[in-house]
Length: 392
Image (cartoon, rainbow, N blue to C red; front, side, top):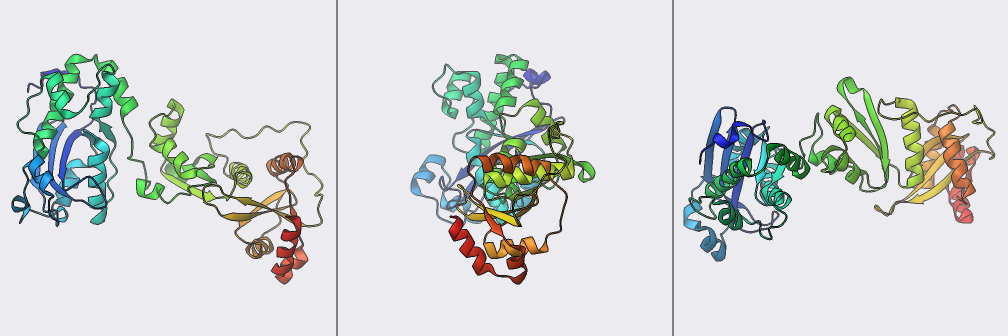
């Protein structure tokens, strides 16, 4: 096809159109049998394809669909043997595929097996077609071939199908005003490439439940502190989500490092967030206003430190939060560990944010139990446990 339609491309960055053939639809069970790539960049267009030995039989119905037989892949390169070359072709380019989650998922899994993190930004042409042509009911590759007069050299072979996606991309540049096309691409694209050392694999290790998190930029400058009842989900929304505000996009572009802390509950997240904001003073957080009626200090109404219990709905774990002299000390999974944490803590200054948060929740009936420093110092966890039972 002519490439004259791309004199004003909707995306200036290098892109790759990718299609895979596999032994089935499960990333965990099945393997790749063929890879096809069309690379498009400032230097023009190039193609790359190879059969892959999947190391497992190809089911008969897959052989019939694709024409790829066990005999054809016997002696073909393994994924491991082509991984370095393939990664070099794909790295740093926008990953475009039809039903892109399927292709990206298989490649990410295969790269993971050889010790390589594969996290490209992704654009699915099924979703793009739906966004651009909502009146149409069918958006499969056969429907696009028929609707847009694409010219298949074959079907259900990796490079031939990747070329069809490339043809569709070119057709769009003649059918849709470029600004409209850019707008829909921006809405449809999923961004997985995160700055600094942040990867999808790293985000997978963030707490599923309540916690706080902090973003850092160049030279480890604090950028933002936040909290969430679903930290992992919130981080993905910040850094790779589709529906982000312009402010969130600007922030994500500056992030080089992220850290988080599980808090075991929403009140703990409120306390920890306020404490981190006061300590880090990140540029994208508003410092809480201090009014004339706010105390610079306040009497502590208990004989010693107190604890209160929370259970994380997502994690199902129970934690004990410790507050002493209007200062949030932290939390621990057991009272014995909470007592150790309190004993090791250093007396700090009055925290207005802790006073505000705790006053509010005490007024709503938050139940607390006293932690005697004498009991803490003697390690009398049994008496603390008994006190907790009494308080409950």
